[in-house]
Length: 419
Image (tube, rainbow, N blue to C red):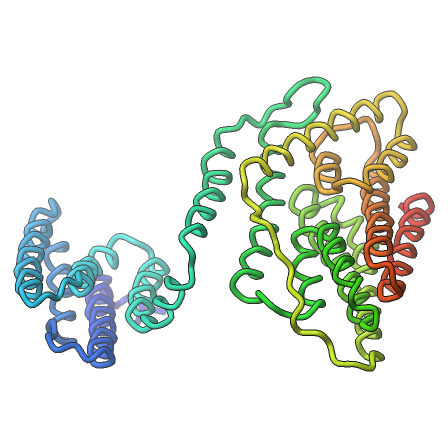
């Protein structure tokens, strides 16, 4: 410990600057060789000297004027270098910008914490070493995806901080902030499913369809798989497995959302939801184990764009509506009426109802809210069983429909006897 304290901080900063500049120089040298550039910019030693120059000029002058002058001088030399390259119709600014960033390593070592310095160097090395991967991503990434990401950033990073965390009205015991936070969380899950589907699993098995679409919306997944099942009567295990998988993903999604909004309620729902998830996976494994034909690999599902403004507004409107209805029911009729409401709401969209339960302040006990969440999810299972049977019109969905009805009955029993 004494030896560590004996090392001057200036020496440590000096060594880190030279070492990291040298590492970037090595990777840049490999970058030049792998791309077979005819015109080379400096060498590994050049980058080490650029980093050393930035460190010394930043350290010896507290006014930073020398550092600024060095930056201007280096920039001017790099500008001349770029001008000479442009005469040969080579217009890349990459090496110029990289040199300026290496010049900044000295101030970064001095001013920022160590984790930022390491992150900065790792980023430079990855940009140098993963050129083919970056090009593949940029070629595959559609322009509309940048717009989609921008929408999500606006929803979460611009609108959310501007909303007040105060109740909307006496009859709506939920804040503006929590309403929009619910929109962002649900949209985030949908966006994740959309990205995975669009860039990793465009065409996969029915089971993957149930997994990804279930993360997006288990009801929508059931409708799509039910329609496909109409022509897949012999693929009973595959179809039923996909339907059960979609429902299992619904419980996983709900459990994560509930923990984000109300950790105490999440702890009380962890046991029943985890039991449903585990049993559902065991049923899926059993169905796939005993099937007697290869699984279809060409079933796809079209997941709609999850971040349309109209979708966000509709979800927020449903959230507020369910908050008002829940407040009215709990105020005038109590917890038993809330249970009936939860079963009825289960045949619609359960996400805004459950989030309104967890975000508002109602005149009912926590046990009543937990029971309502269980009943709403169970009612949604009954709806999905009906969709599957009506849309498929064959025996391929029988096992899944039976399992969903069992979950509905189990939800009622658990809500009224144990919650």
